[in-house]
Image 1 (tube, rainbow, N blue to C red):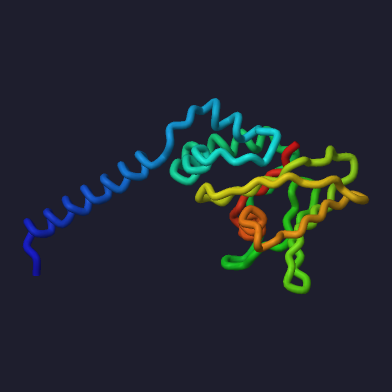
Image 2: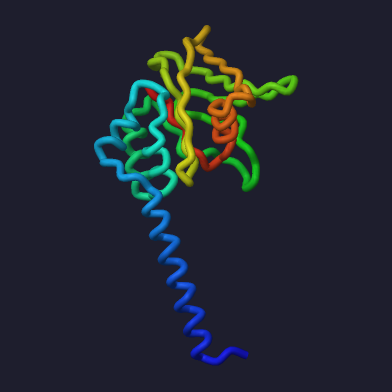
Length: 175
């Protein structure tokens, strides 16, 4: 059985290891100004800024600030889906709009049924609580429905398909 000195040393080494891990994570996160982060959240396209994405994965305060910016810019938001633990959400209400992921013959489709009298969204962004996210441009609706094939061969569309069905992911409909 280890004596008190050995336990104290183990605790000290564990604390040093944890501090070094935090230091590494902080050093790995790029320096991004708040203005750049907010501008990224309200960008009019789906272009990715890798420095901002790395920061969003590494920093909880940055994720909160970014989520606030997206929420203000969004036409509608679904912060979380109602699903049992471990289940995948295939239907979500985003404001008055209905988002569905439909799998048919080995293919997956994202179907967005738009509410009448609402402006048509131009982009959809999905964010996990850990900061992983993706944004895609939406096409023009046909009779109030926007439909996209979620091609698993395309990394961005595959990430969207995965994130959209995670109940704890936030979904934003943006102009």
